[in-house]
Image (tube, rainbow, N blue to C red; front, side, top):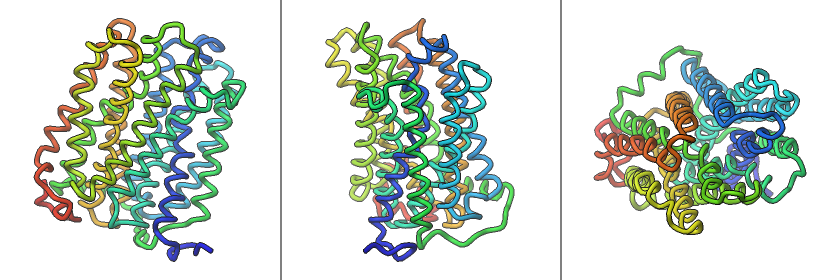
Length: 404
């Protein structure tokens, strides 16, 4: 019988957390998975669908800033924050169905869903580090891998016709998020959670004085310019390659991109023990930059070949994400981890709004060449991370201000 609380074996606790992240993240792109149905039912344009994606990002940013700048992320129990946010997110995601084509109401509900995701993603990272701080790279690899898979899960639900209607896809995502809340509430916090702190506005900004944290953070910011914009247009890229394909075919192909990203995160976490998180992140960034560069020239190839390239892009584009978080967590004191990661996420997701709006606005005009608009992100991230290449796992130690 498994022991509850801080006495549970870390590997079991980590498994519960990453499964909960998988379920909770299904809220993120639930609306994108039914974009074609919304276009038919509500008459939404590509630009309006882009607004529905960006407003989730904006909600996430506001929520992350609130958690970070007030210190709430480190003041209260991470498991309780996660569970409460997952329940609220499940409710607002389900309520989206009732907005009945009213774009203002739909945007408000997606904004609140984004707020709740701030208590699922960065708080989930703090939670998993509280159980296995010595294996942060691998544990966060699994966590972000499940976040990636969960983000694409609604595409899978729709692709296999698990729900007969687009409303059913959203309801399934809400049920999964509510299940995540129950699992994490039952689990509780890890033994390395850290003591509660009084609310302190702006104290987290001190971590940016640490060179190692700055390097990880700025690498992450460049990575985020590309990541969510790529995820947002992946179904559009696939649909353009296979004109006339059914919605389920496009959804399943898009889910393949997310599966590849999940596997990339997990593999990167495993490699981080041998290479170090810095080298894993730099390798993924280089691969992602290459995909951005060559994709527009590849579209004349057969459909299957281009789809394989997109899946490869999906693998590289997110494999570095958990390693940025691992490096940042190692560079700041335990009592600041939740706030520091929340602030880093908030800035990163603010960047995604600009890139998502740019690519959805220019999509019809530039087509496949939209990939070049994403290229500056991984290139600038490589510049920020360049000094990390020479570090070994042993040198990526906590609070090592010389590591950048």
